[in-house]
Length: 345
Ligand SMILES: [Fe+2]
Ligand SMILES: [Fe+2]
Image (cartoon, rainbow, N blue to C red; front, side, top):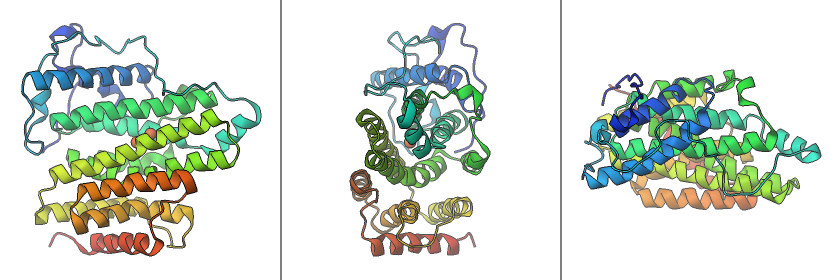
């Protein structure tokens, strides 16, 4: 599939716009990688639009095989009233009661989560970029709209806990730039799912659950731990989403192998594997390569999904993914070596 650079359409008459046009109008500014004043309202409107999209494509029987269906599958008009623009007055919120932190709790959580908000920002922009710039199958487009919403929920929760003014800090800081560059080098929705959701979110599965564990160990308030545990469950689901799309779009041929190897090489060039020394950081960084090894060896999405869910739960309890260490390192290094040696001839 080719990139389809899009211009946000005029949204003066939203009832005349297709779902796709409305989604592109909302996501376009987020896809720029820069701060957008009404990012939360846009994310919320995209989630509502995704719900409308699910109804509309079913009613119009637009679903078709994911690997072949074009982006234009969402070129229908919603049959129900929906968000007219990004000026929704609703407020984003995880289903956890909490208040802005103060004093020692603020210091503790601020130290433990330094830089995490920029991780949430980049995934909001990455999903928006995929939606706007790549020819997404309709189901994948709906997934990205919901992903934007969930990542925006995370950003809102972390920002509200810490009292962050997002307009005063870079949306994508320098140390996240290589990640943003990797996303923008994606040529297909499958590239994006592999880079962002199989690889980066694979680390996020363990890191987010371990973060909730560490906050609990450090004596953070229970509601704060619950915020991060909720985020961790959603991050694991984002990782599962990556492997679900990999399985659906995997053609199984030689070109697919070359492409997968190339994407892994690009990822490892900016995110090299650390020494296999058993530390939490080392285990976390090997985990997505281990998942890809499992996928390559078995082709079994459900087996990989089980491994993701089990690692998320283990990291929440112990801070570690819970994969036997020999299996983790052997699998990850096998896939890393395979990627290094598998190049187009
Ligand atoms: Fe997130
Ligand atoms: Fe995520």
